[in-house]
Length: 322
Image 1: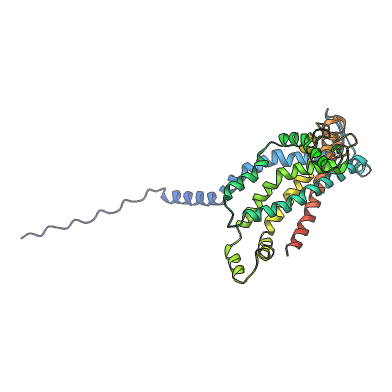
Image 2: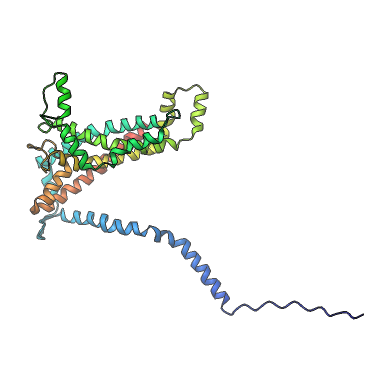
């Protein structure tokens, strides 16, 4: 009986001579990918923001320090344009108009949005998806169409609102002839268009609140009204601050609605009854080509006012929600 010799297993192949270098390159590539790829992904935003946001802001700031016209001729005058704003009665008139329309639109708009968001957040409400879509429809409609329709509704002789006021014995109102009436008409347009948008943002914030808090409060005997004040509002504070700041920025930059309400007149009525800061900036910076530097100063004044008002609203909302 012969015993066959066992064959030895083959020896592993020797690694190529450049294997350590390949491993080092792969490790280095992975580290670079993890470290720098996020910056590459967000680079398009910063490139677009730099080209269409930051550069125009810096360019406008430089223009505001010059006596500049759109032909290209300019002379450095320092802060003279800003000094002229202090004594410019048209600038202060536009500032008062902007704050008046802002107060009549933003405050009722936020309160209505908060009410509707809380209503749409109720578990017993049927057809929630339909109502959520329906409430956003005004924001989808073109702002030009909204202004044209509401301009017809607020007509002096044949407008619907004057007809309704006539049924209760109120005389016809020339909505474009007085400050309070024009502010009310423009604020109505703004409220109709943007209330649904803010409602959906607040609704998203409400749905992020844990349901366990409401269940525990209900077990403890808290009424729905008490749950709203003790749970919903405090937990909704970050979202509400965001909505307030967003509405502040939009309210301070109001332009299209009053411009179309004035039938394209950049001065906002015969006596500038509802000319906003954005309209005044357009008048000085673009409509009048020889005062582009002054218009740039108005633009930066609007920017500083927005920052100031936003900070005030931020502090007030934080304190009110405590």
